[in-house]
Amino acid sequence: MNLNKAIIAGRLTADPQLRQTTSGQPVASFGVATNRVWTDKAGAKQEAVEYHNIVVWGRQAEIASKFLMKGAIVLVEGRLQTRGWVDKTGGQRKTTEIVAERIQFGPRAGGFGGGPQIGNAVAPAQAPQSTAPELPIIEIEDEIKAEDLPF
Image 1 (cartoon, rainbow, N blue to C red):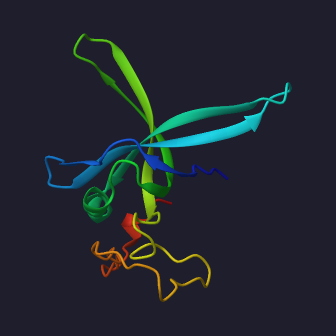
Image 2 (image 1 turned 180 degrees about the horizontal axis):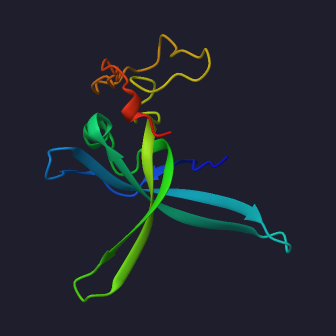
Image 3 (image 1 turned 90 degrees about the horizontal axis):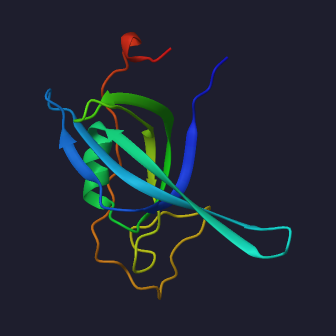
């Protein structure tokens, strides 16, 4: 059995870039930074940052480009994919990226308004409400076809 699954939570390094393929399929790409903190043998605190390239397709690409911005917290689930191409000088290039299958937005700036609920927690009555637009719920109404299944 094989498994190709990546799950990361971090902050966007730039606003998502939305494009369309020649066939009209929306695709967005953005970077996510994740931090790792540890204590070395000498007892000193160490920190390392990893940068991940994310690609998201379809309706999720449109939503990500509309609601995500640099610095936002995001959780991305997807699969690793390595692709190659020939650059302008004729050299072979490769990149590994996460092709997102699911994106979950983190809390929005300004408090509880529009942010996700964790467990059964709800916003207190005195908490300021955000004036930001509500995040949409994506519902897929199309019938799943056998030829669309990846296995």
